[in-house]
Image 1 (spheres, protein in one colour):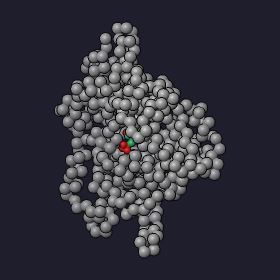
Image 2 (image 1 turned 30 degrees about the vertical axis):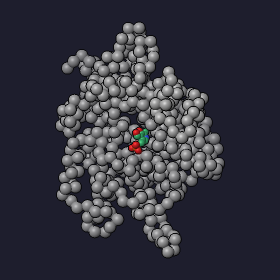
Image 3 (image 1 turned 45 degrees about the horizontal axis):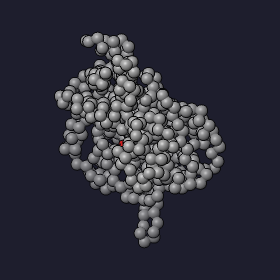
Image 4 (image 1 turned 60 degrees about the vertical axis):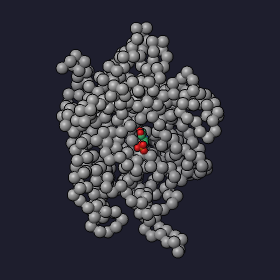
Length: 463
Ligand SMILES: Cc1ncc(COP(=O)(O)O)c(C=O)c1O
């Protein structure tokens, strides 16, 4: 054992209890080390264990599965496996089947769009959301505005990037009137890794809001217990939790708020009866009304295999391990100083493990404190086999606050171009400021060697 690792274990003793993940990595994630890959983009996508793919392939190659809308035996089996997956989702999140429907979608974004296009926004109604949100949540504002609802953003505050709680409390307690009002926020930021308090769910509901919780970046490494927390809508993508399959996400929704949604159309599978001659249709009740066409019935059984993996490893063990590695990663990075005494990196978000997940965004600075282009860092890491992400990670609000881009200067840039603007044009417009950051994110199969590889890479920029 080397000195770094020993010091790490002494500072984060919980890590030692997670050694089962080292065995899993050596066996079921072997391809990472075989290929010399340091994967640090788990917030982009989780990684699958090789056994998930083998077991799924074995199922597909030995069973006959057909469209669940038919009634023949292959169809009945597909339906049974899909229902098994649905129950497994509820079980994993400790959600009562009486309290939550599981609606399968293509991804978290499609789950968000189902709410966005169907929510009864209207004049006098409100859509409240945090600056710190993925673009697929930001996009809901277009539906809200088109129907006359007001849109209000609550800022996060640098350097910790936590919610401006006083402002949020003020907005939540303003009278909501007789309208439908929606509040949307992420349980964990895909930019800063900040975990926004789940206590806002009940506070907002008590004041008359429906609450949409974006759990996409939270659930891969944290327990979300839906018997303790009761958001009206929860969205997620399964590939972020266990890597495979892609193309499946879910909207978990409580029956009463789901009953408020008005779908803008009907499709195969969403109706009980539709007629061309009579020009009428009746929507199905519950989840089927929101699953347009044929669900991804070949991939749904793979969800059960993914949950088997998470249950075998244990979400709490993953959480502990990722927390320890994140703590060491941040401590090590912020300790790096140029010979001028200036820090090498600036982390956007909390620099302790407290109420944060394993997503760390930062920029590199030279010995004079100037930004080093994040694209250069991303490319350099890639050349060493280290996979990180650069840019603003589809979370422009958090990025703008972190980087100190004011609404005024951003509006000026957007005023210059009418229909289209490329990312490079945008970068030129904000000239000497950085338009993004790099993001290092940890997950299920991360180990100490991964985070140390990134810290060693960071050291190469010291002057
Ligand atoms: C917090 C958060 N919400 C939503 C999404 C959208 O997920 P998807 O691209 O799978 O629809 C992401 C993806 O990165 C995310 O991190």
